[in-house]
Length: 70
View 1 (tube, rainbow, N blue to C red):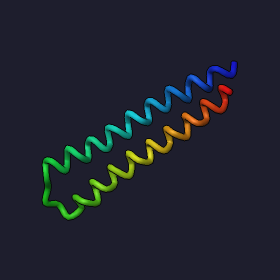
View 2: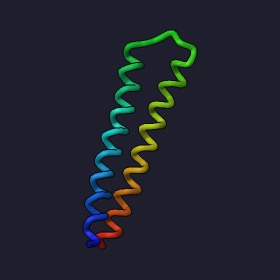
View 3: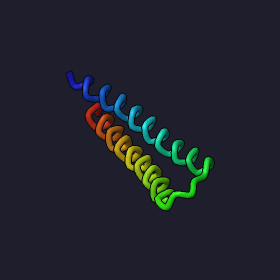
């Protein structure tokens, strides 16, 4: 019974890492495309910070999964 939260935690970790990577990749693609909007830098920074937040959530889920497993 305790293995189910471990599996779901690891799956959630993979999902959050994937979403974080997609956010950061989207910001890089927007940077390469260029723009002249006033909020361009804020939008890029928001994408990068959002990606890092998702990585941190994924790490927390990973630690939780390993803790329950042990």
